Length: 122
Image (cartoon, rainbow, N blue to C red; front, top):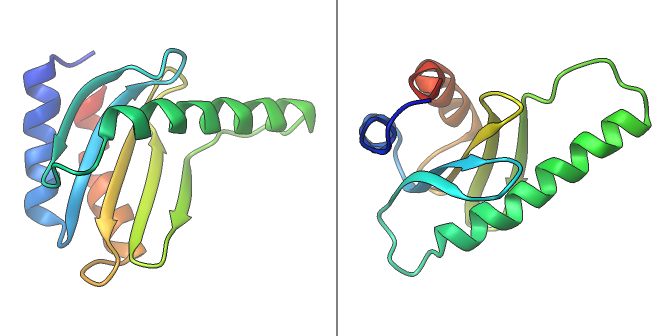
């Protein structure tokens, strides 16, 4: 597991390559605790968003188990009127939660940049 400084440095890299970057956090799936974060929006409660999103991930994993799906959950996409939110699982234990301004970025860029830097969180 990377240190909090390494996590923040990784988010700095991602923010530098992602237009419209708003906020990102590395989240412990089970507890919902934020392990490291970066935000450029002081009004964005990243700790609360991370905790609630951990509940979504856990519920999706339960659904997959109930349906006997024999595959891995890679990511979850939430599109809002003016934002894109992506949850990318790094492992069953942690995920990256990322929010970007939809007018400045698109899903292809988000997936490309997250994919490029995902190994920094392992």
